[in-house]
Image (tube, rainbow, N blue to C red; front, side, top):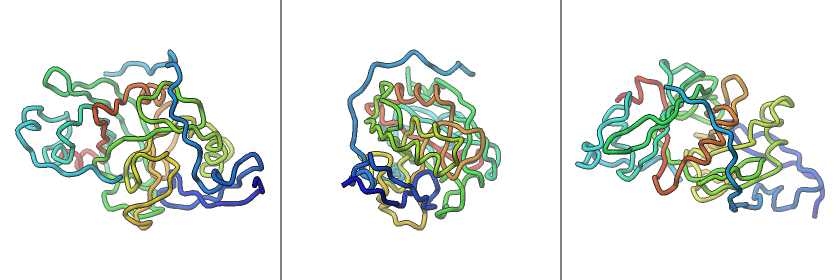
Length: 263
């Protein structure tokens, strides 16, 4: 039952399959990329970042509610129209140019009848920048509006409000995808709902829209450079996001260069 075998894993590679060797302590189910789901919250930790200034989300018309809410700074009306009207938490990952792989991740909440910036983080995105019509393996981060519904990581749940699936094998996966010096990049992850089945662990490799556009796009721990398609911030900032993103506020992420998201 615990025979050593090699399986294919498409995680944070924009669709490029990475071979992962499963060790004897890994069950057959885990070798088939169906890790046990751990969704019991642990007590929140005290680490917090420093202050600074499923499928793509359904499109909705700019109704009265959205007009009343106003626009998130830097986000245009067409992009705002793609947000569900009940979304009250929004991350915005953006950079000046489409080819950039360094970016800024801002978090906004709708409070007191307006969008207010809560946090701002330095981030990285795909090595080849942003692209709306990306393809598997092109090393771009998908541009668009996406929901955030599931989380997980190598480490125990830090108090996530999103459903959290712990998978101790993600450390080996991280080293396989990025190299031996990157064992901690998947300590905490939040699945971005691009070409994935929501309500499942981030490691789920089902691709509802087919394999051509890739998948396995996550928010995860930064490793100091551009990614294969994911968006990254520091470890303590990931822990803060996990404790802050609230399913009751229907969190979403807007991604793309400034010209794209300002439409």
